[in-house]
Every structure is written in C-alpha cells, then in structure tokens.
Length: 465
Image (tube, rainbow, N blue to C red; front, side):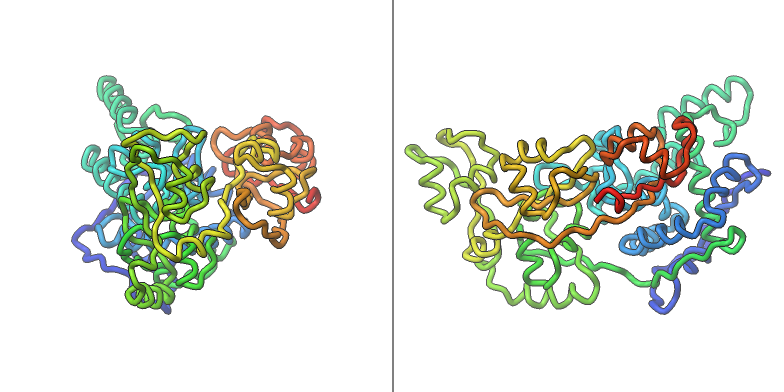
C-alpha cells in the first residue's frame, strides 16, 4: 500500500476553543496522515493496543496536563496534528524522563540538539524539560527536517535517528536505484519501530472501536496558563501565593532545577487555568520587596562567608549550599549569589530539597550525596531503610539547618512498566531494585530474553512494601 501524506495547508487550522468537546475528537478531525495499515511493522505495533484498555487509560492520564498544548501549538503552526502525539512515543509525556543517552524532557532532546535549537540549560534551568520551550523547539526542528526531506515520515525518522543517518541512507538507495521512502531505507532498529509506533497510535486514536478499547474523555481546554513574573521568584513563594502544593508547581514547571526560577529568565511560570488569574492579581498587588530576589555580591577585602551571611540574614551553611562551596574559602572580587527580601527567611525555612531516586541509588548513596544520615532520610520520608528504593520516588531532604518534619507515608502501588528500547530484565531489575526472579515470576516469563519494546511488565510493588 502506497504511503501518501495529505498535508492540506489550504485548510485554515484554528486554535481549539470548545471546552465541552472531547480533545480526542478534535485530534481525529484534524488528522492528515495516510499510512499502510497492512505493513508488518505497523500491524505489529497495533497488536499491542488490541483489547488493552489499561494502556489506553494510561495514555489519557499521561496526556491530561500537556496534550492540549502540544495539539494547539501544532494547529497554530499549520502542522499535522499527529506530530503533537510524538511525546507519547518519546517519553509517555513524562517531562522528567531521561534516556540512557541523556535525552530529557517530553520531547527527549539530547544536549547537542537542544543547543542547536537554542534551548537554555544551566544550574537553575533546563529548557529541555520546559513544556513551552521544548515544544516550540521540537516543532521548529521538525519543520526544519521536513523542509530538508519534503516528507513527514522521513522528518519524523530524522528526529529519532538524526538527519545525517537519514541522508546517508537516502544517498545509498539513490546510488543503487532503489526507492528512498521511509519503508525502503536501511535504518536502525529503533527508528524502524519509531515511525510505526506513531502511526499505530494515530490509528488507535482514530478508530478505537476496531481494537476493542475506548479512549477516556479529555476536555478540549487548556490545563495551564502562562503567567509573567517580574523577576526571579522562589517556587515556594509561588506555592504560597497560589495555594498550590509545591509538587504541582514542579509538575507544570519541570524546567526549573532549583528552588527558584532562573535569575536570568525565563521570567514566567505555568499555573493551572483558574488559579493563574488569581495568582496574577495577588502578584500585581505584592510589594516587589516582598518577593524573593537574588543579588550578585562581589566579595570585598576582609569579607568572610560568616560576615556575608550575617549581612543578608542568611544561614551560613545555606549560603555555602547556594553557591556550591565545599569549604569556607572565598576570594576578593569573587561573585556570590545571595537572597534578599524579608519574606525569604520564613518561606525558605521549612522548605526541603526534592530529590528523585535514580537507577542505582540507595539510602546510603543519597545520604552521602546530601551529607545527611540514613536515619534522617527514613524519618523525613517515613521510609523503611531495609526496603528497596524505587526509581523516581520523591525524597525530601531537610539539611541540618532546616526543621525536621515527619511526612505522611507515601503509598506504594503496583506499576505496569512498558518495556522501552534497550531494556532487559536485568536493567528493569536494577532500575527498580527488584530481584529479576520476582519480575519473571510475576509476569510468567519463561525466558528473560523474550521481552520486547512496548510489552507491559507488571511490578507488584505492593507485595514488597
């Protein structure tokens, strides 16, 4: 069956606006891809969705915060709406997803491509995880790739494998007198599966009844709204003003690495619709001196960290942490970051550092990293140090100059883990700190070599927590 992409730019696309409508219906109406359902690789990917309501439910859940935005931005740019679904394939719409190659964010930018697309990254901020910035960069990149190949499938493949590899394979086929469409190229296994994964997802969204599933309703309205900030602001203070939990602030603004927005911008923040307007009103009526702000202090002759800490009413140990000092040595004309603003002390006093467990972490390694004890970690997070630490578990760190606050237990639920490219039972075992024998037993897998990308592995964590 011939591939033909019907990109009808003559149609006037418009921004989504009907909040009573289902977002999935809007997506279906604007789909323009035409693809070969009988191609073996597409059929293979489609089988994973058949009668698999759990995967579909997870799809809707993962897309509830960000999908409207990626869809609406694709429409504004007159792009195929199918491109808005790529974050499902890349990261399951998880802004904290990180690949083995260091790709990050919902669009999974590696550092080199992020730099090419002008995505900023520093100690304060990582634009690859910023929903707005990364979506704009991803669409700019895809437009650039499409202009190079004049074919969306090749552009999508190049997004995955890199344009150099796609161009190289096109050149090889031309020299041999062979076709140069996506299906005819000799591409890496991952890229060969990447495009069919997107096309199969498109087909399931278009015709869910064919696969004995139903797609849960998603409202056709924005989840978040961009709020302009006057300067750098402490995220704890944003939480205080908005009335939101700090976790919600980070979920919508995963680009911010630290406790505050970047001192050099971007000077905006995303908040849920309905809260953003009220926050803006309060912010506009807040004395600027009450906002958490940061000064750059030039060390003078005779200065010590102790004297600077007293001058700015900041804890000595905290001043060291902010500036990343390992010891107490400072030098004349050295530039330090120091906070100012009277609300800073009360806002920051009880604010913990938030750390997400990574593969290979243990209580011992985290305690060593933050110079605290395993007992501290156990008390602050109500965790049993004899149990496994699960990847992506949120750990609260209260340094010694913070007040210890015992938190409520974090529920431990079973996980349905989708096997990713490059995964093995050993890797999954190490990632979650679970013996591989348990994984094989739970899923009745006779041979650990038989797992495949997209397969759902059940991790019955409730049995070990």
